[in-house]
Each structure stands twice: as structure tokens, then as C-alpha cells.
Length: 512
Image (cartoon, rainbow, N blue to C red):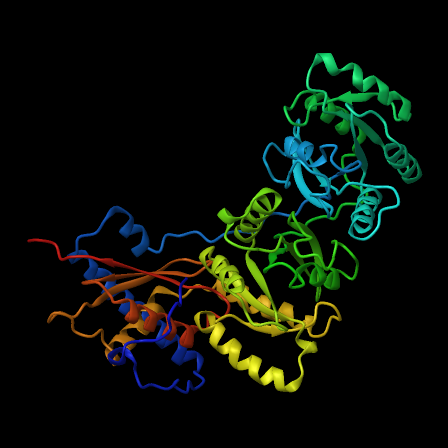
């Protein structure tokens, strides 16, 4: 990760303190900007004497694009996929989406939360909700899974009721029918696991449920899903009566990540003020990433609750393997990740691996210590020292201490997120960047190696989100000196909560 190993060799450690910056007048600031621009032009002109590659010119001319937010849109119609456990709901959702998004395994109870996905069929966009299996008189975690399925029905514009055609209608299916009639939503009946013409007769038994025509489908092979979706589109309105419109510019996307049982789902439920996701003492309750639009301090945020990262992906299997892949994808889709750590136990290798995943993905980072309110004063003093040691590689990340269960200090999360995102998007002008490096090199030049001293010819910021800098030099810069440049960049320009990438391009003078 960038910012690794903050220790410098003795000859590279400058004995400097942060300078006191006096306030400048508008005229002084304008003069300084003009001076920086003049320096940039002079250094840029000097690069004509060096051998450059094709993409060097683009970087030198400052050609890069920042990401723009998505435009606002009307609320999409919502289709909830419900049924008893192991009838193929998640497999059908993946078939509708055209990709393996929902976690699937050949055993009941893999899906536990209600999970939203954006889908499209015949030019129409809609939201499909995958739900956990609904069971009669369920206890424990199964009861909370069934409760989430019932909430999905209440928030849907239409329901896709999935029944196993090979088994036929069961007492549980009949109880679900009563639940659907009580909700009063349009229902499309899916007779799943009809894999060929010989088994189509199995679907006719489902007329007895009184929900109209059963549509024979094989979610596994895709047979009949087109006709099923045509029927679902007829049942869905054009604009949802329940879905939420996405604000113009798009809400910022936040991934809640960490190892199992650190309180990710509890935190999402607390900021929402409702039991949106299933919470249980059993580690690994969440399997699919759960997206939810949250309004905090007057601003919209997409919060994504993810599965706990247990160990390296290649060491997992079954549902845990696919859950780990979905978590990695959720990190890459997010703009900022909140890594939750259990303050009641010592930080583990899994915790540091999660932090590394976020940094390597180039996402803004906030570290949140949960269960802090349970710590006594003596333990807190020791814990602070442990944290300083554990987080030596990411001292630039903002840190909050809170309690997901009680809500204590959760209000500190939004300011930390905003600081991290602002740094993630920071752009330094080329003139100011080169002026900074000129002063840095003049005060603390790169040490001589083999009688030669590499010079920094020109520098530019090649990208934001995260900030990426490219240095054109006359020779290779040692890793220790690059870390020193990064540290001084952070001291001068902030960059709190974002990884920084610094790459070096060694260029030689043109031969006359």
C-alpha cells in the first residue's frame, strides 16, 4: 500500500518542523500564483531536451478527467422475489440480472437480508429485491430473515413468488399466499425447476394456489425466464410508489467493511433507525452486500453493508467464497470505505488485511473502532498505544471511536467521511506542485548514489480519486525518498483519509 514503512534511512531523515504559514493578502496570493505558473512554464520548456514517450505529452499537458456524478432519476419500480428456502430465488435473480451477483449455494438459508439490485428488461429499468426464505413459525435468525422478506413485500410494487415445481405446493407456500393476498400487491407466480418439456406438467399443480397462471421456468438454465419477465413488466408500474429517487449528482457511496462480527450491520441499522439488515451473534450473518440510501445531516449517502472478510479469498469455499468476492467488488464500487475494528480485542491480521484491501483498491479510508464505550479508562490508555503501533502504515486515515449498538459518537462518522472524500478528490495545480518540490529538493536533496544524484525535472498530478502523481526524473528515486515526498505532501496539502500514488519516470536527454 502507499505510505508503507514510514521509517527512513538515517541519511534521509530531515530535522525539520512544520513552518508557520502567515495569512497572505489577495495581491500576494496572485503574485505567488503567477510565480508558480512561470516556474511551471520554465520547467515544462526544459522537458523538450529529454526523450519522451507518447503518453508523456498527455501528462505534461495535464490531460486527465475526473469522475462525474450520475444524473438524478425517478424512483424505479420495485419487484420483490419471495418464496420458501431453497426454491431458487437467488439463482433466478442472477438470471434476471444476467450476471452472478447474488450469493448462491446448494443449501437452504444462504440469503438472509433483502438485497436490492438494478435490473433491465426490454428497455425498462427496475429494482429487483432478493430475499431470504420465508418459513412458518421460524425461530432465531430464521425469524429475522422471514421478517426481512415480509418488509420486502410491503416495499414492493409487484411480487415474483417462486415455488419449486418439482415439489409442488406445500403448506409453507400456502401461508406465503395468504401473506401476499393480505399485502394486496400484484403477484406473478414462478414455477421454478422446470428443466424441460417433460416436467412442464409439474407446473400445472400450482394453479391450486389461486394466484393465476404459473410460469414454468428453469432459473438454472434460463428456460422460460423471458416470458416470466414479460409478465412481471405488465405487473410493474412505470414509476414506483415505494422506491426512492436518486438525487442529482448521486449520493456518495460508502462501504462498511471488516472481519465478521465487528458490528457492520448494527451500524447500518443504527444510522437508518430501523432493523434494515439481519443482526445475529453468529459470525458471518451477512452474505450479500446490502445497499441502502441514508440521509445524514441533510445529505444522501449510499451505505453498503458487506460480508465479513474471514481469510484470504482462495482459502474460503461455498457461500463464504462468493461473499468474499462480493465484498471486494463492493469496495471497488465504493468511493470511501469505513473499516470497522472491534476495540474490545487486539487488532488481528484480518483487520490489517481489510485495510490493505481498501488502500490497494485506491478508495478513501476511515477507520472506526466499535464497542469503545465498553472500554474502561485503564484499557483505553493501553489501547491508544496499541492503535498507534497497529496503524503506523495508515496514520493518515481519520479515526473515530463509537458504539454501533447504542449510537454513541456515530455522529462523528459523517465529518470523517467528508474529510476523507475531500482529500480523495483534491487536485494540486502543476505550478504549485513543482514549487513545493523545488523547495523540498533544495532543502533536502536526494542522497548521492554511485557519485550521481537524480534530479526531479517536472511533476504533475495525473489523476484524482485517489491522487496520483508522476515525477519525471534524471534517475531512479529510492523508496525512502519517495516516502519522504509523500509524507511532506501530506504535511503541506493535507490528504487526510486518502491513499497517494507516486510514480517515477526516468528520462534521458536527447542525443544531438
